[in-house]
Image: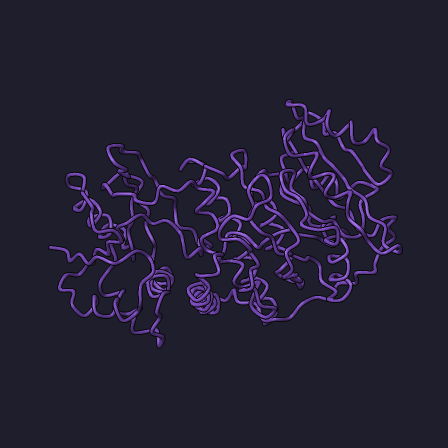
Length: 447
């Protein structure tokens, strides 16, 4: 009979795990993250047999979720080398090898208060495979009925900062163990390089945003900069069919000299391709500053603050601070998202653990013209941020610069589980590719 121990979710201390390992009598242990699990017939036997057959260090599986009288399928995704998110969804049942769990716990000299389970699975991943069984093996009760867009910001809620600090320390130890940790050494960025008509460009990619595009454009046009720093606004419309293009053309007809309108052709562009169109436009400024088509700047000094930070810190990318608001600009919880967990020394290592680097984002155009955005509609900014952080400094601004408006038409407002899984799978791939690149970079430095 395989031992089963119930934990209170994925936040777990190392002492609790040590007590489980000491108490276990079987060679395998079920770590159950929810109290009420109902197994599909013979699935436990199946899971344990697959651990024996494959030699996996840990096994997890797809499951059903029950909310009230409704039962839905809740598949999970494969755990890649770069799947370093501490909120990776393994489901509610983890089958681990008792011997390896004890070995992993012996290897750590830390008594994690929150990151015990996270640290354990990172250590297990260095000992063997974390095997995903794509079969529905059990039923769990799902009590968190919030939309995906509401859950999205849990990890940056200020009340969770102590938890996040521990998670960062755990992943940093893991990166050192696998050879992917980067020392705080950066290439210098000559922010005066190149000839540009404009010092900065606000880039607004859009598709079917007729309700919000006008306020976004006018928020950008309302920016004020020092007279020596000219700026413009580049709006890239990707074949909108809802009247967005007509709104843009009406504003262009008002005669704004610093407004550039790019109408994309019918081929595939997505958000990344729209960004590339703006970056390679002859009117693009030295610094390209993000403004999503359904958001607004919080004041008229955002562009100037970005310019100042680029020149003062000589960095290749700058990320600001935003606040969550409703459609009318009223602040929503958790309020201000500042990513103060980012440190100059370790931010780029911790970037492999979290699902985003913050907003608004701004880029040094000459470098981005070399790297380019991936032509995707999700994760394109994260991909570029990871790549830049590998070698270059990323500056931060902790003043609120941006209103991130949450409404029903946000692309992540209420994703179904298939979309969420696809998004997470892609970002895990980005992390895997970046992890491999950093390992290779460190090996090259040692030669």
